[in-house]
Amino acid sequence: MRSYLVLFAGYCALMSVVMGAVVMAVAAVFGGAATWGVTLLAPMFAASAAGSRFIADHDRPPSRQERWSLTNRSFVILLAGAVVVGGIALAVTLFCHPAVTAETSARSHWIVMVVGGLVVLAVSYGAIYIGYGWYTSRQYAAGRKRRARQAARRGGKR
Image (tube, rainbow, N blue to C red; front, side, top):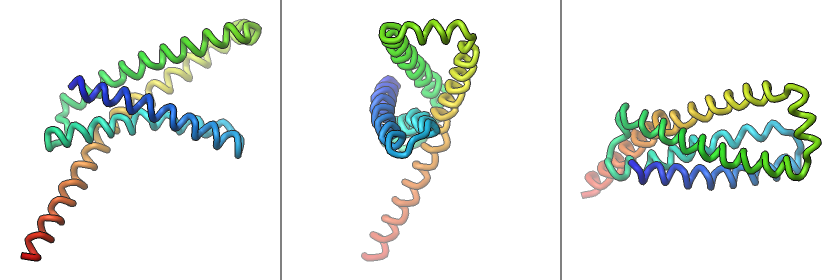
């Protein structure tokens, strides 16, 4: 189970960096902040990659209990990463722009930021669950169909 969580963490970090770079490039060229929501797909793709490895190792999708365990543990990994990255971003902001931070905290924007953060966490948890559940099951079914077609082709040629 641990290897799948390590795989999830690695893929999630890699996908977040790559998707973040793509989003920055798109925002620089076309403008707009709406593209930042795309990075929420990184946990789903990372969970899907870990689920694919699970299928390759066990030749079955994760059971309900395994899926919940993988989802919850992956969410804890994602949450820990978000706290570390968010803490670093906050420290850099406090160091570089202390007036902006003081103005933001004085205006009660923190309520909006907390509610927004909770929404992002809920969406991230759902994305992880979809990555381990629906998407992994879909990959498994597609793989079985592909193997059946290949077996039929081999059987028909003999």
